[in-house]
Image (cartoon, rainbow, N blue to C red):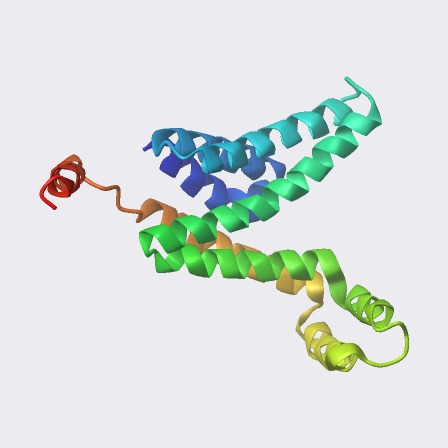
Length: 193
């Protein structure tokens, strides 16, 4: 129960709270994983909290910059794992808003990390500068024009992240927990075969 509340608040605050939402969602995954007895979700939250702690100790000068860098890497990993966790929970519970949130947040993440220019550079490097690998550079140039007319990759990434955060909060709050009676029926029905 507390995990769902923390996750809902954390994802809704993501467009506004910045680093604070990472703390809330990480605590939410940790609590939700404990409540559902799912060690994978618990470890997602743990990675996020350790990452935040590492960045904060480096930011406030408590430790060396290398610890802050390691915390940053863990936080980047946490964001990827958080998207995967949303997808997994959405698939297992049949929750469409969670699956939509995972897709929107993944697109936002890709836009924010890659940017339009680096996609073209990566395609050129992957092709060995011989050929336009799969038409990716050509497609990137065409997409760049429309993305720039909308406001750029940063604006588009923020829009996808905000939409994904809303869907994540809705999906988390609408997850149905299996009732105790239903799980007991399932246990006792196994013995009848």
